[in-house]
Length: 152
Image 1 (tube, rainbow, N blue to C red):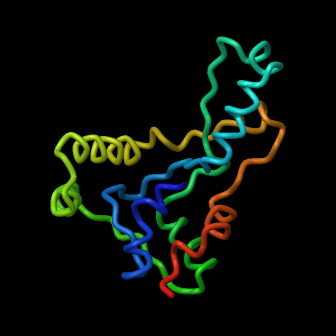
Image 2 (tube, one colour):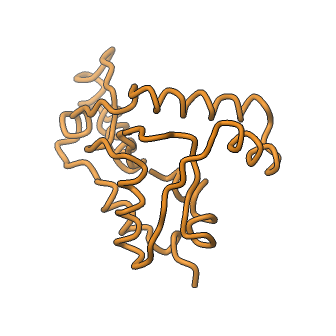
Protein backbone atom coordinates (compact mmCIF):
# COMPACT_ATOMS: atom_id res chain seq x y z
CA UNK A 1 0.00 0.00 0.00
CA UNK A 2 2.75 2.54 0.70
CA UNK A 3 3.74 2.24 -2.97
CA UNK A 4 0.68 4.35 -3.68
CA UNK A 5 2.33 7.13 -1.72
CA UNK A 6 5.85 6.50 -3.02
CA UNK A 7 5.04 6.03 -6.70
CA UNK A 8 1.53 7.24 -7.47
CA UNK A 9 0.81 10.23 -5.24
CA UNK A 10 2.36 12.84 -7.60
CA UNK A 11 0.20 11.77 -10.56
CA UNK A 12 -2.85 11.35 -8.33
CA UNK A 13 -2.37 14.86 -6.94
CA UNK A 14 -1.61 16.52 -10.26
CA UNK A 15 -3.57 14.46 -12.80
CA UNK A 16 -6.26 12.74 -10.71
CA UNK A 17 -4.97 9.46 -12.13
CA UNK A 18 -2.34 6.78 -11.72
CA UNK A 19 -0.83 4.76 -14.53
CA UNK A 20 0.17 1.09 -14.59
CA UNK A 21 0.54 -1.67 -17.16
CA UNK A 22 -1.55 -4.00 -15.01
CA UNK A 23 -4.71 -4.52 -17.05
CA UNK A 24 -7.59 -5.82 -14.97
CA UNK A 25 -5.26 -7.48 -12.46
CA UNK A 26 -6.58 -8.15 -9.00
CA UNK A 27 -4.00 -7.83 -6.24
CA UNK A 28 -4.00 -8.25 -2.48
CA UNK A 29 -1.75 -5.41 -1.46
CA UNK A 30 -0.80 -5.18 2.19
CA UNK A 31 -0.29 -2.28 4.55
CA UNK A 32 3.27 -2.04 5.85
CA UNK A 33 1.87 -1.57 9.35
CA UNK A 34 0.43 -5.11 9.12
CA UNK A 35 3.80 -6.46 7.98
CA UNK A 36 5.45 -4.71 10.93
CA UNK A 37 2.89 -6.14 13.36
CA UNK A 38 3.64 -9.67 12.15
CA UNK A 39 7.39 -9.06 12.46
CA UNK A 40 7.08 -7.68 15.99
CA UNK A 41 4.99 -10.66 17.08
CA UNK A 42 7.27 -13.21 15.39
CA UNK A 43 10.42 -11.65 16.86
CA UNK A 44 9.10 -11.41 20.42
CA UNK A 45 10.40 -13.94 22.95
CA UNK A 46 7.20 -15.98 22.72
CA UNK A 47 7.05 -15.54 18.97
CA UNK A 48 10.56 -16.86 18.38
CA UNK A 49 9.49 -20.15 19.98
CA UNK A 50 6.07 -20.27 18.34
CA UNK A 51 6.98 -19.14 14.81
CA UNK A 52 10.53 -20.50 14.46
CA UNK A 53 11.04 -22.09 11.00
CA UNK A 54 7.49 -21.24 9.92
CA UNK A 55 6.67 -19.37 6.74
CA UNK A 56 3.67 -17.14 6.21
CA UNK A 57 2.35 -15.48 3.08
CA UNK A 58 1.46 -11.98 4.23
CA UNK A 59 -1.19 -10.32 2.12
CA UNK A 60 -3.81 -7.65 2.39
CA UNK A 61 -7.38 -8.57 3.34
CA UNK A 62 -8.94 -8.18 -0.10
CA UNK A 63 -8.06 -8.72 -3.70
CA UNK A 64 -8.79 -5.50 -5.50
CA UNK A 65 -8.48 -4.30 -9.05
CA UNK A 66 -6.63 -1.07 -9.63
CA UNK A 67 -9.94 0.35 -10.84
CA UNK A 68 -11.40 -0.57 -7.44
CA UNK A 69 -8.51 1.15 -5.70
CA UNK A 70 -9.15 4.25 -7.82
CA UNK A 71 -12.79 4.22 -6.65
CA UNK A 72 -11.68 3.98 -3.01
CA UNK A 73 -9.20 6.83 -3.49
CA UNK A 74 -11.94 8.87 -5.16
CA UNK A 75 -14.18 8.34 -2.16
CA UNK A 76 -11.65 9.43 0.46
CA UNK A 77 -10.29 12.41 -1.52
CA UNK A 78 -13.69 13.63 -2.75
CA UNK A 79 -12.36 13.88 -6.31
CA UNK A 80 -12.56 11.53 -9.29
CA UNK A 81 -9.36 9.48 -9.52
CA UNK A 82 -8.81 7.11 -12.42
CA UNK A 83 -6.64 4.10 -12.97
CA UNK A 84 -5.21 4.26 -16.48
CA UNK A 85 -4.00 0.98 -17.92
CA UNK A 86 -0.98 1.67 -20.11
CA UNK A 87 1.15 -0.56 -22.31
CA UNK A 88 4.45 -2.01 -21.17
CA UNK A 89 6.18 0.15 -23.80
CA UNK A 90 4.57 3.36 -22.49
CA UNK A 91 5.40 2.34 -18.95
CA UNK A 92 9.01 1.61 -19.90
CA UNK A 93 9.28 4.99 -21.65
CA UNK A 94 7.90 6.87 -18.65
CA UNK A 95 10.18 5.11 -16.19
CA UNK A 96 13.19 5.66 -18.46
CA UNK A 97 12.26 9.34 -18.78
CA UNK A 98 12.26 9.55 -14.97
CA UNK A 99 15.79 8.19 -14.78
CA UNK A 100 15.15 4.60 -13.70
CA UNK A 101 17.77 1.99 -14.47
CA UNK A 102 16.92 -0.72 -16.98
CA UNK A 103 17.18 -3.52 -14.39
CA UNK A 104 14.56 -1.80 -12.22
CA UNK A 105 12.28 -1.10 -15.17
CA UNK A 106 12.50 -4.76 -16.19
CA UNK A 107 11.71 -5.87 -12.64
CA UNK A 108 8.66 -3.59 -12.38
CA UNK A 109 7.35 -4.74 -15.75
CA UNK A 110 7.82 -8.39 -14.73
CA UNK A 111 5.93 -7.70 -11.51
CA UNK A 112 3.02 -6.17 -13.41
CA UNK A 113 2.98 -9.16 -15.77
CA UNK A 114 2.82 -11.39 -12.68
CA UNK A 115 -0.18 -9.34 -11.51
CA UNK A 116 -1.91 -9.52 -14.91
CA UNK A 117 -1.59 -13.31 -14.86
CA UNK A 118 -3.51 -13.42 -11.56
CA UNK A 119 -0.69 -14.65 -9.34
CA UNK A 120 -1.12 -11.85 -6.80
CA UNK A 121 -4.79 -12.26 -5.98
CA UNK A 122 -4.52 -14.91 -3.26
CA UNK A 123 -5.61 -13.66 0.16
CA UNK A 124 -4.09 -15.20 3.26
CA UNK A 125 -5.08 -14.89 6.90
CA UNK A 126 -1.48 -14.70 8.20
CA UNK A 127 -1.81 -11.23 9.71
CA UNK A 128 -4.80 -12.26 11.81
CA UNK A 129 -3.29 -15.68 12.65
CA UNK A 130 -0.01 -14.27 13.93
CA UNK A 131 -1.10 -10.98 15.48
CA UNK A 132 -4.72 -11.57 16.38
CA UNK A 133 -5.57 -8.19 14.85
CA UNK A 134 -7.62 -7.37 11.80
CA UNK A 135 -5.91 -6.45 8.55
CA UNK A 136 -5.96 -2.85 7.44
CA UNK A 137 -8.08 -2.47 4.32
CA UNK A 138 -7.11 -0.30 1.37
CA UNK A 139 -9.93 2.04 2.36
CA UNK A 140 -8.44 2.41 5.84
CA UNK A 141 -4.97 2.99 4.37
CA UNK A 142 -6.27 5.60 1.91
CA UNK A 143 -8.22 7.35 4.68
CA UNK A 144 -5.18 7.37 6.99
CA UNK A 145 -2.92 8.86 4.31
CA UNK A 146 -5.37 10.97 2.33
CA UNK A 147 -3.14 14.05 2.52
CA UNK A 148 -0.70 12.33 0.14
CA UNK A 149 -3.38 12.15 -2.55
CA UNK A 150 -4.80 15.69 -2.36
CA UNK A 151 -3.32 18.77 -3.94
CA UNK A 152 -3.59 21.67 -1.51
